Image (tube, rainbow, N blue to C red; front, top):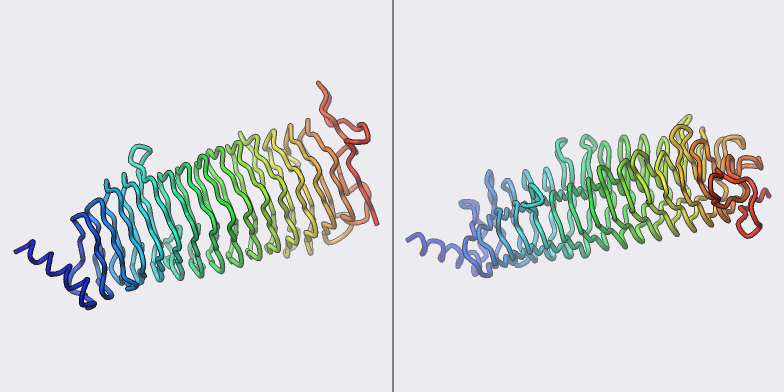
Length: 436
């Protein structure tokens, strides 16, 4: 009788398209299941996948209500969920348990997921979740609880590929939200990600904690709003070998600090390339913040920080900020038209306390960064650090004080043994200052 009941239930769901609220669905045998209508529940997981080798085709229908819309039990593999919507759940639209692999999510729209849109709950490096593909997924009006921490949560995930993801109108003003949060994840690739018009008490577009060899590229993080602080891409913990390419971060607003990229302590050999940070607004604004202790060999190249605005008294607008990190590179980048209405603007700033050592700052263009007065307008300002190399940088019209164009920077510098910050160099290595 039990087998007959399961067969009959599946037959009705697939063929007749009724909406049910009287039972939750459990898929516990391999094969393909296609919904013929909306499936509605309350107080339980609406669909539970309890078998490997399952294709769940929602058939352009919706899974609604319940705790999780679709829950994938631990220790499963080769699961595909596609073609439909998930809405109005109290926890997550999709929840994946530990030690799962080969999970594919395609052509899905998730809305009104109260805690998270999706969650991937690996528990350790030996019980991680691997080989995940997210393709053509949109999540909106989710992470609505004051207890929400993320729209998509990845914990102990490896070999992830995101190919087209939209995160729109998520979050709430009471929660500290990361749109994408990676905790102890490795070898993850995200591309064509659009994260726009989201909000939070504090908001991170993409947050990595202890990431290794992850890549985000060809993505936009824009028009987001935070009551306190807003960061486009944030790295914390021990982060090694990650790359960010062709990412645009713009029009984000914060009541406190608004930052494009923030690399904190213990980051090593990460690269930011061909990225744009523009039109951030906050009490203080930073295009790229490279923080200190044990951070080394990070690179910013061919990137820009333009039109950042500090709108509070004593606030700062900084294109590129170095705070204690060592042996990094800033090359062929632009920090221009950043302004502090009641404070100080810098194209590149080395922090006065920690500064930076053994940096290579080469062929950057620093133009028209403007504080509230000429004496608070700086091109490059080195307030701390030593053994840094400045080559062929160009500073133009950062206020009208010549000494502020490259304050603390020799006109040309070449690395020589036991010599710090040379104050003369052959012409080809020289930095250039122009006052109109």
